[in-house]
Amino acid sequence: MTERPSGRARDEMRAVTLEPGFSPYAEGSCMARFGNTHVLCTASVEERVPPFLRNSGTGWITAEYGMLPRSTHTRTDREAARGKQSGRTQEIQRLIGRSLRAVTHLGAMGERQIRLDCDVIQADGGTRTAAITGSWVALRLAFEKLVAAGALAGVPMTDSVAAVSCGIHQGQTVLDLDYAEDGNAEADANFVITGRGGLVEVQGTAEAEPFAREKFIELLDLAELGVKTLTGMQLLALKRP
Image 1 (tube, rainbow, N blue to C red):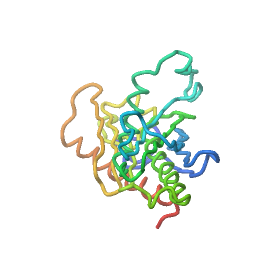
Image 2: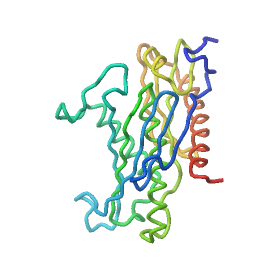
Image 3: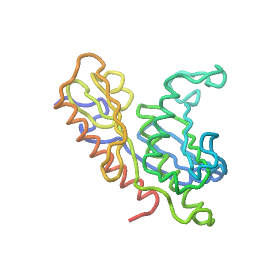
Image 4: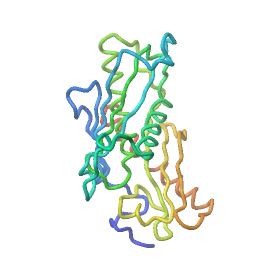
């Protein structure tokens, strides 16, 4: 069996920590650390909805994502300085929003929007998966704050959701790719999965040659294992049994 650059077993994740309440001013927040990837996730409550939902009685969840200039080995200009967001940024923002809306009863939110901000402090692969995992904790905390204030009767969430990357590196399927593996993978995929095991989204790509169905099943099995671990950590971060 080929050894991974990190020395981890093929089914071993990086060291993961989820620190709730990291930002004292946001209604909900979580610092998600997947190894050397660190993403600050905050949830801000707005007592309004986008125009297409006005007078509908339904709420909305949206996300913004960005990488700080020195989150990588070389400085990258802020997208605000460039005057537009990259296609990658827009795609990740939509992914985060879809993932959290999939486990939220929007009709029970009332006409309010919760905006998730995911800022990459340090990047070493898997920033979008860390952002989704941390955002669920931040969103849950924001809902609990609304319930405590009497603005909601209960937390309008139907399940938890987390995400993890998997890939094929030197012919071997592996869990939770870091940058060294991601840059040399024959295939990589991101899996967004609920706590009950439902698939929200799967993004998979062969970087060179097509890979077999059997390899995809191996990737899915690894992802389910990783998300099970992450779900337990999310509940632990919220001090749930």
